[in-house]
Structures are given as C-alpha cells and as structure tokens.
Length: 104
Image (cartoon, rainbow, N blue to C red; front, side, top):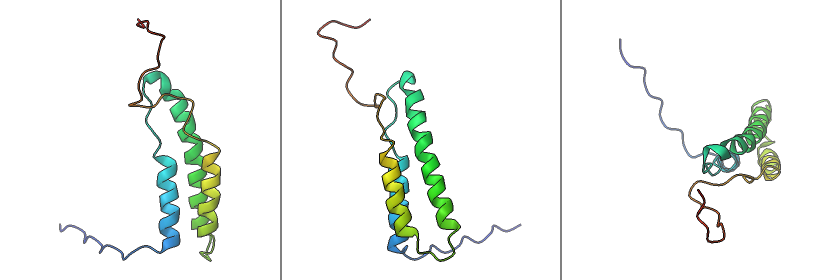
C-alpha cells in the first residue's frame, strides 16, 4: 500500500486569517504554572480562554461570507483580556521573599 500524497503547502495566509490565528496563539500560550499548587488556577484561566477561542473559531467557520474575521479577532482579543494569566505563580519566576528567613 502506498503512502497518501502529502498536500502541497498552501500559499501565504490572508492577513485577516493570520491575524486571527495570532490572537488564538497569544490567547492559549500562557505561562506555565510554577508548582502543582499553581496548576488549578492555571487550568481555570486556560479553560476560560479555550472556551472563548472555540466560540470565535466556530463563529468564523459558520460564517459563509468571511467578513467576520477581523471583527472576531478583535472580539477574541477583548474577551481574552477579561481572563489574564494571573492568580498563580509562573514557572521561572523567583520564589517569594520571606523576610530573610528560610522557609522549610
């Protein structure tokens, strides 16, 4: 049995599609949690962001006119700012200062 042909790479994306994809990546590529204890808040933030990304992509896929791409990118950007990646310690951040005492 032969391998299926690999489709040719598409040409450059239209700018409105690329802009929406950049917002999707920015929205989902949030800093990793520093510890297992930070993972719950990280997941909560990421879950809310994923929900908005899914809604935005579904809206674009269900729009036969293609005129909503720029509006959707702007809408998604606004919704993502409502759920900033905060409330948890980020991987690579220095540990909190304890006033000179060693935490045990």
